[in-house]
Image (cartoon, rainbow, N blue to C red):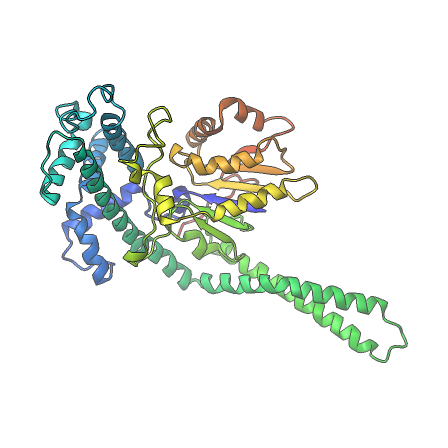
Length: 445
């Protein structure tokens, strides 16, 4: 069993504009000329235009421009949201004077702090203007602010979903259509589903041919049936090979295609559109971008910011911002649980091994809760029963991935699992000509 886990770096390798900075720059250009016709259908064009007054967009654009002035052209949306929610929770729920003054002025405790919380004035003003909520000395307004900020975040998320559908997925689908990839994947998948029955038929007719008596009147027919079955099987296998090599001929980045399951942390359908010739099972853990507003199930949130000591199990004022909470509400991405159950069976003695290949994922703490489950299955098993391959694109990225893995499973555990008889974790350059998974010469799409 082979499982592929992909993050946004997978889309980036296909030269797709899926970085957060790509989206922010697109928003700036769109909103500056929102009256002009765009790639969006009319209804989605109008919906996207509503992002103009979104407070999260304003905050993230401001932070992005601040970073650019410092020479940093990157911004991490989730980190920015986490910083804001972390401060709000700290003040409202677990501040040092919470027990002594549970009804203290929540907003007053934030007003006038250092520049790191200047963002608060924007959210507070927007709450007053958009919701006509007057701020008084009561913590109930923390709940009002939480609800408002979450509504704004969901509007921002919906805009990102529209962008993924109309800009990213549309580009991938157009490329796949022009090069016949969709049809090739469908034909290969159909042939693969027929291959077991063709093989079974061949084995039966081969057996009949080998054991037939020379006196049989239908001996020639048996031989012809066997040869026809052999030809049908060989033709199907050859055609599957030809279809699988379509991607190589197009110089698409991914070189290994024999995955049974794909766990995507992306909202886009890049792998499913370009490479799914094997009828792989899919799990979109954060939801999948789609045009219909009522069907939105995208997860855009952060990891848990409260500790057990501070009451993570009983304080829910800002719980809507947490990924675990959104996954419960949206019922999103639980298929991988079944794969893990299957992996546990495969890890049993005398059974087949399993592999997990991780590419384009930062292994950030926001996703540790899920990734840990895959690492836990392989714990204590040697490489012939289980192996986790983590791919990096340069040496700096390799160091970061090692650091994130240590955060996730611990230094001693990682050392044990990258050396010796029980080695079952490998860090591999994704462009390596032998062990890599990405074609370094690929042009993208």
